[in-house]
Structure formats: C-alpha cells, structure tokens
Amino acid sequence: MSSAPAISQPQASQPDPDAQPIEVALVGAPNCGKTALFNAMTGATAKVGNYSGVTVERKVGIATTPAGRKFSVIDLPGTHSLRARSPDEEVTRDVLLGQRPGERVPDMILAVGDATNLRGALRLVSELKKVGLPIVMILNMIDIARHRGLQIDHEALSDELGIPVIPATAVRKGGLDELWQTVDPMLDAGLAEPQPSSWAVPNTHDMRVAMREAERLVNAHVIRPPEPDTVSAKIDRVVLNPFAGPVILLAILFVMFQAVFSWAAPFMDAIDAGFTWLGGIVTAVLPEGLVQSFLADGIITGIGSVIIFLPQILFTFLFILLLEDFGYMARAAFLMDRIMGRAGLNGRAFIPLLSSFACAIPGIMAARVIDNKHDRLTTILVAPLMTCSARIPVYTLIIAAFIPNRTVLGGLSLQGLVMFGLYAAGVFSVLAVAFVARYIFAREERHAPLMLDLPDYKMPILRNIALGLYQRAKIFLRRAGTVIFWATVVIWVLSTFPLPPEGATEPAINYSFAAMIGKFIAPVLAPLGFNWQIAVALVPGMAAREVMVAGLATVYAVGGESGLVHLLADQWSLATALAVLAWFIFAPQCISTLAVIRREAGSAKWMWVAVGYMFALAYIAAFLTYRIAVAFGAG
Image (cartoon, rainbow, N blue to C red; front, side, top):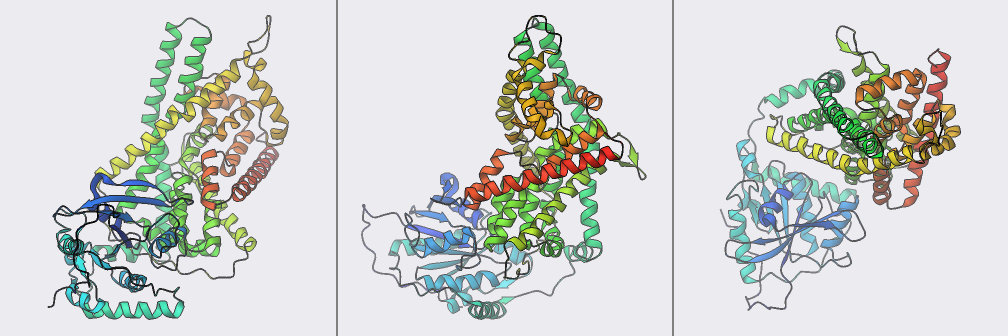
C-alpha cells in the first residue's frame, strides 16, 4: 500500500528567532481520548485557564519531538461539528476560523478520532479540511480497536482523504511513535501557508451527505469482526430492557441510600466520640470562660457537627464512582431519556443532573455539553434542586432526631427509606420545574434523540476509586476548615455577645446578637413553624447548606451529634422538623452555586430568577408541610 501523502510544503528555511512558536490545535469529539493525547504530548508543561470572556477551559502546553523540536499544543474543547451549538463548540470554531479576539489561528490541526468508532471523526474531518489549515488525522485508541478485531487500512484511508492518517495509543509508552515520525519531517520542512477557508455552516442536508460519506469510508477501509455475543451485550439485554431497566436503576439507587445509613453508622459514631472526647479535654483543662466556650462550644462543636457526616458523603460518592467506572452511567442516561424528554429536558441533561447529586456546581458547568440554549439554561436553573451532598448533614440530623431507627418491610431501614424519599422529592421537583419551564420558554424546536456510545462494562479500577474518594474528602475537609470554620466563629460571636446583664434569669444566648437577629426574622418564618434558633442558623447557612448543622450546634451549645439529636427531638415538633426538610429540598442555601449560575448563564438576571423561584418553592413547601402535619396532630 502507498504511504500517507505528504502535504505540499515550501522549501525549508532558517528559523526566524523573532517568529512565533508553531501552534498545533488538537480537535476532536468529547471522549475520543484527546485530553489523554494532550497529556502524553505535553507532559507537565500544561497551563490551564479560561478563555477571556467565557468560562470554557483553555489548556496549552509545550510538546517536544524526539528530534528536539518544540511546538505549542492547544487542547480545544470537544466538538462534533463546527456548527457551534454550545459554548464549548463556539470557542473551537472561532479559534480555528480566526474569529476569536486575542487568539491567533493555529498553524496545524491534529484531528483526533476514536479508532473504535470512526464515523463521527471522519465526518468532523470533512469539515476541518475546509478550514484551510494543514491537518493530520490521529486514530487514537488503536490498541483497543485491534483488540476488538477491527482492521483499519489507515494508509488507504489517508490516500482517499488526502491527509496523513496516523494510528496512536496516547496512554501507552511508545504509542505516539508514528505520530512523531510524521510531525517531525513536517516541522523540519516548514508548514504550508494556510489556504483560504471554504467552510460554511452546514445545513441538515450537508450533514446527512457528510455522514453518508463517512459511512462509505468506514465500510471501504475498516474490516469488522462478526459481532460477538459479549458479556456487555448480555448484561445490556437486561439493564436496558424497557421494563426491567428502570426497576434495576431504582433498586440501585435504593440500595445506595440504605447503605448511607447502615454502613456509615460505625464511622460516624467513632468521629462523634472523638470530638466529644476532644471537647471534654478542653473543658477539663481550661477554666470556665470565653476561651473555653469559644474552643469547646464554638470550634469543636461547630466543626465536629459537620465533619461527622463525612462517612455518609463518602459512601454516596463510592456508589457514584463505582457505577461510573463499571460503565453503568451511560445506560442510566438512556433509561432516563424518555422520562426527561417528557418533562422538557434534553436527554444530555442527565449527566449534569446526576453530577449534581454530588455537588450542583460541577453539574451546572457540565450543562455546557447541551446544544440548545434554552435546554442548557433550563438544566442550569434546575440542577440546584438535585439533592447534593451538602444536604446530607441536615437531612441526616433531622431524620436521626425524628425517625425511629428500626427496620420495616422485612429488614429495610426506615431512616434509609425517608432519605430515599427526600432524594426522590428532589428529582421530582427537577422534572416538575423543567415541565413548567418548557412552556415559559415556548420552545418550538423538537428535542434531538440522545446519542451516546455505550462503553463496555469493566471492573472498576480501585486506584481511581480511592483517588476520587480522597479528592472528595479533601474538598469537604477544606470546606470545613474555611467556610464552615469562619461561619462557626461568626455564629459563636453572635451567640455569645453581648454578655448577659447582672442578675439575668434567662439563658445567656437570649441576650445575644443572635437572638436579636433571629427574633427579627422569626415573624417571617413563624408560619412555617420555625423558631428564632432556626432563623439564626439559616442565615450563615447561605454560605453552605451544611453550616446549618454547625449553626444549630453553636446556638444550642450542644456538643456531639447525639446531644444535638436529643435536643432537637425535645424542642422541635415533628411538624417543624418536616417543614425544615421541605425547606431544604428547594431553598438556594449555597452562595457558590448562585455565583456559578450567574457565570454559566451569562447574566445576573438568571441567578436572581433561580433565587426567587427556589425561595418561593421552599416557603410554599415548608408552609404546606407544616400546616398539613399540624392538621394530622404532629404539631
């Protein structure tokens, strides 16, 4: 077979010391291994930031060929087409076409395609060729393709496309050897001058023609083995069944929330005992006074009341990471697509919303993958309603105080059932708000069907799971040492000063700033069954939802989770407890999330829309919950 055609190049010349370094753009669809290739080429030289004016990530690094030639590599955001249907794709299009201020046009394109699924990559290459820049196509993950029995005649494909086509394996040592053998001579000879761009926005007909051509190329130059009856295929016959699939998904989520209570309990008891012991030492060593109160009632009690929930948060993440590594998450997206479509959500919203179970912030940022502007905005606005890990401390505290720790229905934890119900309420609220939003935005376009490649099932890599849990624990503990620490200090100061007057007969906190603030807000929240202590804890809880627990522990001056649980059970009615749970399903108690909504939506208007509708829903839900509970004798 003939070798890859050489790109027409001018005669080599002496390098100009004042010339800008050669810049090579990596372009490809999401999940094609483009970032792995970037890391393999640049090593530790990468610099990460954002493009000016947008929140899209910008990664640039320096690559060095085996011959010692250096060039700059820019990892452009993943794209399926230059039509630019999302912010990420707009950046890629504008950089390649020289339409982005402050960004120069790259000197060459490395078009990265997944060798196991070439159709989409070849269709994208047909567009990239029209940009007018020198281009090399890289068949990444060629080792996986060969392992599956795929035979790709990359030399014949290169002849037909008129560009070099290079097999590569970015994650293996030596996997880029053929790439360097092609790029080195090109850099040595000097790259050709860019040709005038002939690219125009493709219409539906153009896309169909390009996809048919890509299909023809695949059929002509890729030999596939007979479809084997793989383990993944056998599992998918069950988990993707229209009837069994949703039941299995519901069962997996149900087991996850049961485990959050059952498995985490011993670890929580150990942490609770540790902080109680530490508080006891401080009380025994230091004389009674402000210093002892600050350390024991403020710092240790406040931070300890939040850190105790770390095991439950980690168990939640353990399930999510295992399901992702196992390959089940893409299947869950397919199962939920029809339900979400009926609610007015794009099928691609499933992954951002699922990410919001951990934290709404990465979930909101992940909405960039959604093409349609209104669909993307709807996903951003409803993502905070998903039950994030920051709600777990509040939910767990109230459930432990008011829901008996017993089993029902043949061994199921009643507390776990209630937690599952709260998560289900969050999901239902997302679907309900999205259903209303579809009529507010009055979208005319139909949702495109969800298109995802289903990865093969594989055993989770324990190192990756452990690393993910470590990173989540690190983030949570950093939060406890910064946001929660300072919120606890503020609450202690407000709860302690001014000191009670001589001869005071009421508890000292009743004379404090906290009591003044709480009693000022209390009339607004009284219809919900909230007392002034709850009002005080809600205010700093705007910094982070879990601060609510630290606030209650500090205001009530109770050390240890068990002490706070018993105190709430004595001082709150069941109706009040249920109203607080209803409030936290909806309330936007997280300033960081609101800031990300403002940034991703591109306007403060939508942040205030989110604040307004979530507080309105929280107030209505808490009010109705309290009144109905009182009517049934729970007041």
